[in-house]
Length: 142
Image: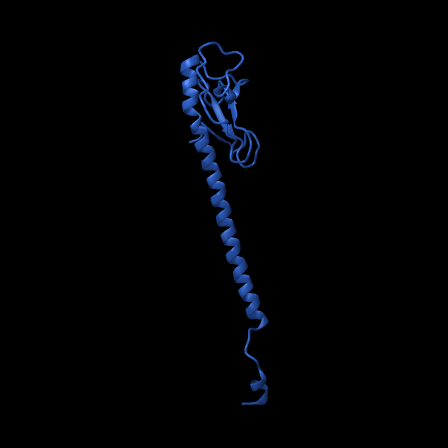
């Protein structure tokens, strides 16, 4: 063997190191995008579950008062008697505080609802925090 080849030390070339770094970056970006989508879906499912949680207390309120809470009284009427209520109010219908949506915002409430004119609408603005957009999550959603 020639002296030049004997002096060559074992190791990685710059190209090999860069190739490994590129592979690691690609794998990392795939993992991050998968985690982000999973978290977004989990938050949407949590909002749907919380919205469905209001169904029973609102039904109990309706049985006692013969109407759903007004839009002005909102969901807080499930915890505290509205000023407009009479002796039929049998609450509190929820023991815990009214939860906020997974994005930290209060749930919206309207009675009668525009989507459910014979009852009520409860919705979250969703991830974009904008009303009347495609990502709103409400009790009318399938």
